[in-house]
Length: 181
Image (tube, rainbow, N blue to C red; front, top):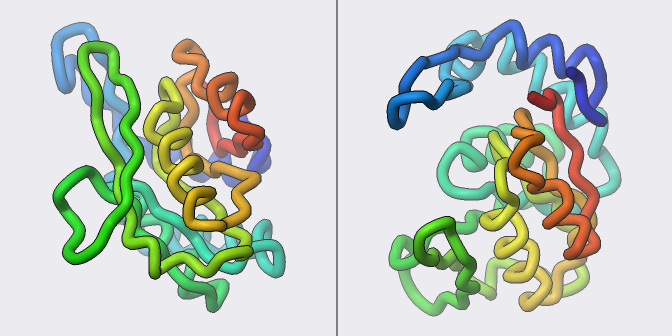
């Protein structure tokens, strides 16, 4: 079903998704954005539609490692705003700050270079998939520690059964998805 980003974007994403059975483990149906980003005209249309939605309302795009970078960089370029990279622990050089978050079996950490964030800037967080919301929520917390205003997380695909939207709502963030499955 199409999400808040609209029926046209939802249809574009849905018609260009790859489905890979039993990946990364047996019983999982993996939804792959590779066919979408490999289709130049479809990918260009997606970025243009996202830019139209967010034009004038954001000062920067924060892409989450790693597929959020693929979506965030061209969107930031189209909007003429900065691109922030939020990465897994140990991947950024220099001074970083981080936020730990829980996984099903353990924990992980997301980091950013704080000097890349302009305090008071309006930042849109973008990623390919929203499942539990742990990574996105940690990233929102991280950006807010740097003084950014974050009100929205945009994703291409929301896996409804994992309740990520509810987790983000607890962080006072709106989730906007292209496709909800």
